[in-house]
Image (cartoon, rainbow, N blue to C red; front, side, top):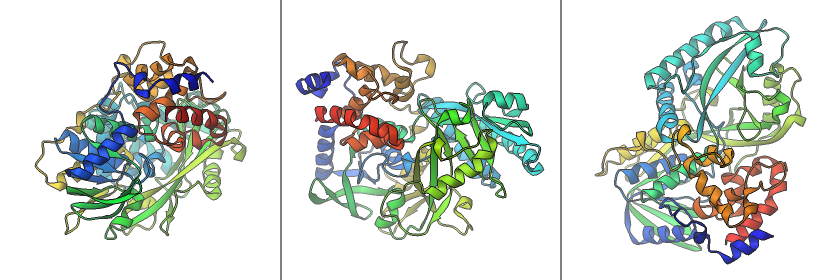
Length: 521
């Protein structure tokens, strides 16, 4: 095919004239970063390449510290890529009385949407329908909760132009936002607004690349075997060696206990199913449905800009330490459909499911009776030998988690800058690339969309989708390999494009992805 001729005869670097960026992650940079980490004593060494580890690296680098990240697998390999893809203000936490977490969420959501990553987050309306037989308590208390959440929005400084006013909807207005709703007995709905990420893994990669642009050294496929406050025994590239730092911070998520047995965690499995939008009448708003008999807990259906509707979420305690990443069990998928289906006129069945995924939440152990009741507050702990571990928290508040971890390190450094620091590609939507650039690239890469599109200058076939019915473009695979640290086909399929979450898309596109990746090696 045409790409083989062009890619085989042109160095990947030659594809980027005038586009060199110190935030680019590729095989050559990984080798250089690993060599420098082995040679030098870093100020900070972070174990874990999820959203928290990437956030710590960015915070440290922008404070003027030398920092390295080692990750056993790939960026966003664990929990960070299995969220509901919401940057939300903590409405659920208000319902549980956890005002502190709700406030922190509202503040960090504002920073993400207004300054840090406005290109990766869109405002999403949420509709909660009410029926004649809906519990009176829900109809009375939900609007009160929405009002409280809106007061936090205002206090956090998020303008109405970003997140609109919550209000009641008539039955007709609710059906306009979500045409597939059950009509019989529908008496109205509430409407509120929250933030939706185009992709949680893309946020991780953007944070990591921004950290790299500020000098952080990011090394994947480097496994920590043991840790102390100043040393990490690492296995990478067939060799075992010790890396040294003035401060080691463990942000390894569900694998934290393997490195620090003093950190007690409770794991909760959160499962999602991916639904054909046609099954829900192509909703323009998210639909939120209360779980009967469990006040403050909901299932939801979240429409996405480029794909299926995300439906979830379960909250099931996992008593044993996992040895592999989870799949969504059939019982979890059945539970989601069972609780969501009554809100939709045609019902929902297994035939409407196009994919699924699940992840483990690493929660800080407490006396709560169930994982649904455990606070999502994060925990920073320091061992006697100086090792710092970061656990708990959630995607929306990653930046604050990172700031607190660096503050606990007590290193001579400048002030935290990340509260107002834009990520690579970040810019207000009205200033994003001009017409002619595919909207999908603008939504996923922001101001870097022009650069991503330009890879097709060497091969026009890269402007096309990877396969019929698949939205991912060939240029995205090129960008993943030469700029985003993807080293394998799985890195591209599972974390850079998310093709693997829909089996039909995986099967249709895998051969083309393999072709492009092989040609770039």
